[in-house]
Length: 352
Ligand SMILES: *Cc1c(COP(=O)(O)O)cnc(C)c1O
Ligand code: SF4
Image (cartoon, rainbow, N blue to C red; front, side, top):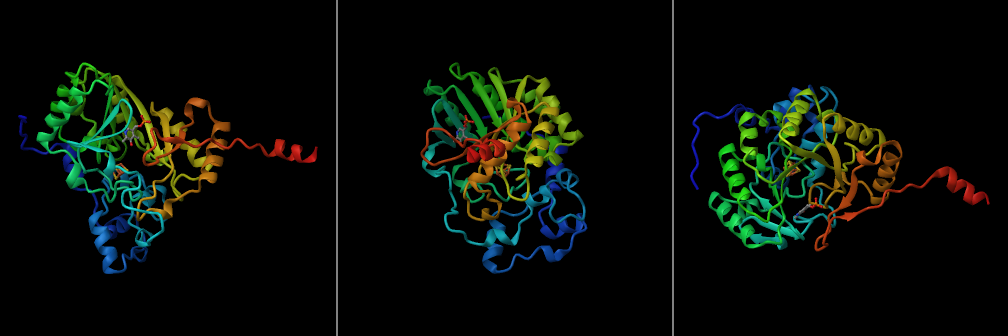
């Protein structure tokens, strides 16, 4: 593939290169006590260096200074709890390794193929189910794009391609533009879906060059962003999202239900309302995948079902995300039914 080389890094690339990577620096920026950070043993340091902290300035700016329990800080700060081994929490909790079809293509579900374009992300979410995934062995190299496009072209059962990673918007606009042009030539492909956290954590990524690249896509475009808390959605993020919506992308959001971040009815309602204000519909709320190092984020299924039940009593149906869990080998994400248990009715049944 040919690619134009631009010598000057763009604004978002510069911003990304300034992202904080040292927990001590993040604590200083938020006026927090350094006693909060104690990686402990050498083994812990090894684990941290395989998934180091990474958080762009603009995300730090949305955290509350002086609050060690800030819901945005908790998502990105490498807490000592990560190094506790918990039974059942493993490196590949969702069976991704077994579903790799080659050339960076992952297929678990009918009609949809997921391309793992890159291992890079603008932020390192501590609860990420791919935090221990061997990206270097599976993420696509430039020549793989041609190979993947060839495989998709050969398989008319694929009607939707999902660009994932890592975060696909970590790629340069040149490479994205090339991929989009190639995908547009696949006649049986009806939808292109992009799973990205960039518009939330690095809204500067949505610039005119990205919009130009997106214009190469002939199919319907769906962009699924990832926000977990209303505080993530500020004016800059709203602007980025409306730019995307203006270019006829359907905007959806997926969240992960996270203890200490969004595990309350108030936080979830606020998130869903704020998403709608930004032109985004809540799509999924995922139960945490049991990935090693993330057990401290776990919310029990029964609590999750009760929370979403309460949310569904307060919001219109189109603002209630589907509560789902990923299960290795299952033909779709498993829906967990919201608990609509009504205490008044329940008491009456007991009386009669
Ligand atoms: C989640 C996921 C999808 C998309 O599932 P939808 O229910 O269509 O959103 C596709 N492929 C893989 C491998 C996934 O994990
Ligand atoms: S942006 Fe997504 S893929 Fe990247 S670390 Fe966060 S959850 Fe994982």
